[in-house]
Length: 100
Image (tube, rainbow, N blue to C red; front, side, top):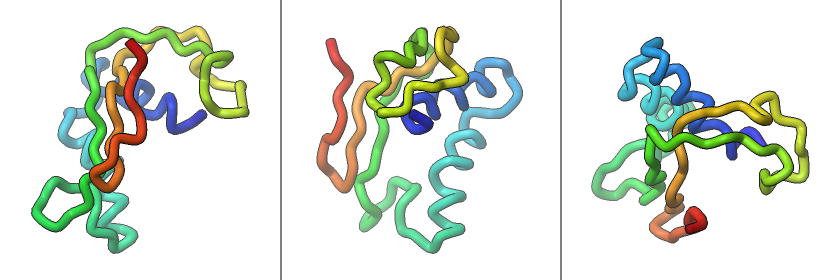
């Protein structure tokens, strides 16, 4: 459940002008990878092709009943957020593609 709402929840900080987009993305990509000594978190030759394609302005309404997680208790249930994940690529393989 947390991963499904992570991007739009974090993007609310950007849309409220509380953090620059580059700083927000760095905080959830490069910073954790560096902390753990991983090669990921960046787009560079030799780095894993782990990417998220998203529309940061697309409005979404969180519906806990439609979340893929078995846990349906979301603090964002019914809340309007912005940021829709369109595609997720892990190690060069598409593992998620948005419906429609």
